[in-house]
Length: 112
Image (cartoon, rainbow, N blue to C red; front, side):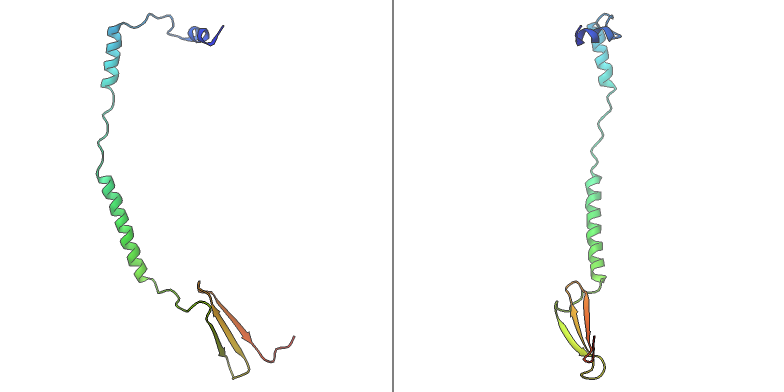
């Protein structure tokens, strides 16, 4: 027994007579009249997207103007400054482009 015969045996409507042309037309009319109407295209949606983008741009400009200016020390600039007396302790400060500061302190009398 093949699959086609098994499907025909398992079909609950397999023993019913076929539909008449009038029944088919009535069923088609019923299906086509109960279809939902297509939703109208909503034009405000693109306007809402454009307004949101304009608001985001304007707020970023306002926030950008209120933020402090970035650190303007040139990258790799080294400054040597004495801390207390001349010749006793000196300091080397190194600033990176990201704003990280490295400070070395040199003591002339340092011994291991």
